[in-house]
Amino acid sequence: MRNKVNIIISTDHGFVTKAGKLGVAEFLIQKGLKKDRDSDDIVAAEGALYIKNHDAELIRKVVAALQQEEWVGAIFTKADKAGSMKGWVPGTLSFDAIHWNHPERAADILVDENWNDAKNNTGYAGTSYARGVAGHGGFSPYEVHIALLADGPSFKKAFEGNLPTSNVDIAPTVLSIHHIPAPATMKGRVFTELFTKSKAQPSGAKNERVETSTVVNGITYKLMLDISTIDKYRYINYAKTERVLQ
Image (cartoon, rainbow, N blue to C red):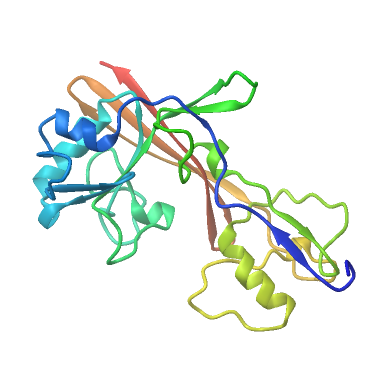
């Protein structure tokens, strides 16, 4: 049925080796910013931190404490102004920059554990300061970059595309194959570069980096987001942090 059926295979995220020993909630309790494990002053859902009553002063204190820790990676907050890539707290990037700006569900702070290129005992690169064995992905390139395999009558044979795609592109692509218009609410693009019969080709990807930094207690916290864009579509490649002692 290979000449009749299209198959698209992907995944939700890649993996790294986890070497962390401290969780965000435990850290905040140690620092006296969160009362205890069950308190609702700060609710931690993995890296999403919900601050009671959106207390701006507490948000600033939490971010500043996290920015000083080597095991903490990228930190995001709400945009300093509509559409901005910078977060309103110094040294953070915005939820808008990573397509995480849901008006009701977005937390007050989103924090990722730091990562490096260290290899594990089987030779695979990518190590995170997150705890545990597996998680739902972070901002390292090892977790962001995943495979996309497509086969069937609609797709080119033995072709490897270098343009970025995302899982949000799959639904509009499937609709396009069946000549069904995609709803305006869909954010993804149709990856026409993989089609056997398509005259419409996307322009090449452009790379850009967004950077921000701040100084906290003699430590310069630098945060960089690496992005690829195709026309109006923006893809996150990875986020990287650096700390420099003054």
